[in-house]
Image 1 (cartoon, helix red, strand yellow):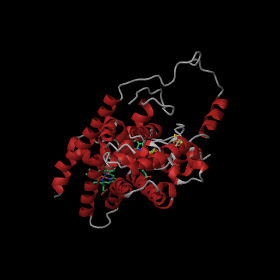
Image 2: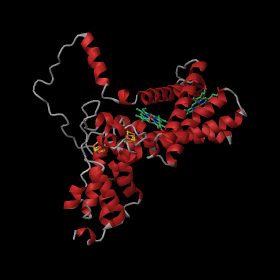
Image 3: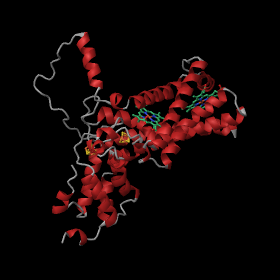
Image 4: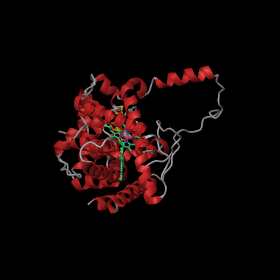
Length: 221
Length: 133
Ligand code: HEM
Ligand code: HEM
Ligand code: SF4
Ligand code: SF4
């Protein structure tokens, strides 16, 4: 059982994760080949006005006013912490990189274990915050179904089980099996559920022509 | 007499329309994180005491989302319900902001096209009695 989920299942999960994202990405590029002018070049628009450092900072702060950092700062802090820790913790985790090194010889540089342990705790606290929002805020509840709780669980489970494994709570072997299974489940579901926003955030916000594009995206569906 | 009670709903036509835009619309629907951060960017939501019914993602899920979920098997009641959402609860001002980049107005506009293809749309006097501002 252990050999199976650690060997072939794990490879399969990674293959589905990578191929799934590649499939979604290539569909996106096929479907959005058409281009449009999102911001017609205005005369003189290329000319940059020189600003003093002070003015630059004042303007920067002023531009925050219209964003979610102004309207929902708590959520923005939580979601930023959540996503940063969620990405950093597993990639720079010593245990993962040791395992990678043993099987592929390509372990990355790692954070100290006590640090990644804290990142894991932050992720779990943020998940609890999301859960509370979903349960108690009318506007979130209005668009919540069972599926949303399930996906939140899928995202949280590898962190919860990883935490339990690291602290050797409960039966280590069972927890480890659960950890690997839930991690595999997460990898498999990313390309096909709302977790796919991991890829589509970049495609939508950078490549699609829109007023809110971070760059001058010009692709259209 | 409005023509809305005459023409039978052609689900085949709805299905065809849904299919034509599937690549785009289904991805928008499925990658929405259901986070509700778009709520405050909609002036109608704010003008209605933050009633969740007016939240951009709610409006999309209850209109276009339902049509895809039912695979186009819509009856007149559903389309009439959707009519209220996509014409009364949204004015397509295009101001909604989604951090992930989901484009709500194009989805509402598409739901309107589908309703219109079945002759479901606000009729003369209805349009004025629906003045909500
Ligand atoms: C699928 C293959 C995976 C394997 C074989 C694996 C294996 C492990 C091992 C051996 C540990 C250390 C337990 C200990 O120190 O005794 C661990 C911890 C951890 N894993 Fe994984 N893991 C996998 C995937 C993932 C994924 C995909 C994530 C997150 C998205 C994840 C998140 C974590 C975290 C956050 C910890 C550390 C918890 C802490 O230090 O508090 N793992 N994992
Ligand atoms: C890599 C780039 C990513 C970006 C830019 C991004 C961005 C976002 C944004 C803007 C939201 C909406 C705000 C919120 O509800 O917190 C969100 C929600 C969420 N993200 Fe990500 N995300 C990324 C990756 C991931 C990954 C890899 C996962 C998990 C595997 C993930 C899990 C979640 C979850 C579970 C939510 C919803 C929280 C809730 O239930 O309210 N995200 N993401
Ligand atoms: S449309 Fe965007 S902001 Fe609104 S709930 Fe969906 S992901 Fe969140
Ligand atoms: S387009 Fe519709 S949902 Fe978006 S802000 Fe305007 S009224 Fe609200």
